[in-house]
Image 1 (spheres, rainbow, N blue to C red):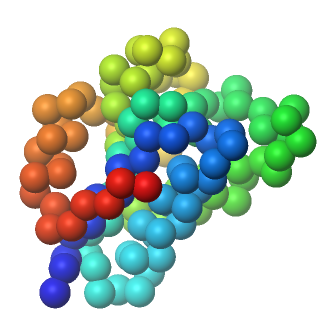
Image 2 (image 1 turned 135 degrees about the vertical axis):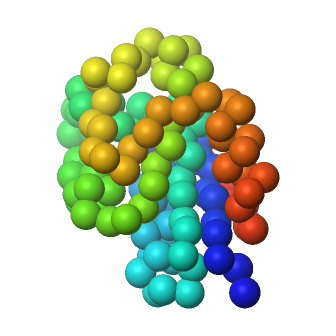
Length: 122
């Protein structure tokens, strides 16, 4: 039986709902209880999702408040690629960073992926 899952997400929060669905999927896997360890890794444009200055309503989209609340309330671990933040011009102080969100480098990401029993790219 699979005990650990990593979900990699690199699509931005606009035009697709990949980040939201990745977080929902990972939280759902944890909630079912069969999987003990479920993590989401935000790469590339997906890092914009955690920018506290993001205003989806400007594009007539629903805000991401429910998903951000799910992040805060769940045991789900979310990792953000440090180079993707740099490339996007986002500083750590610009992010919503509850205790379960961590900024990591590519070596740490590689280690997490190698240690996981299953990995999805969403």
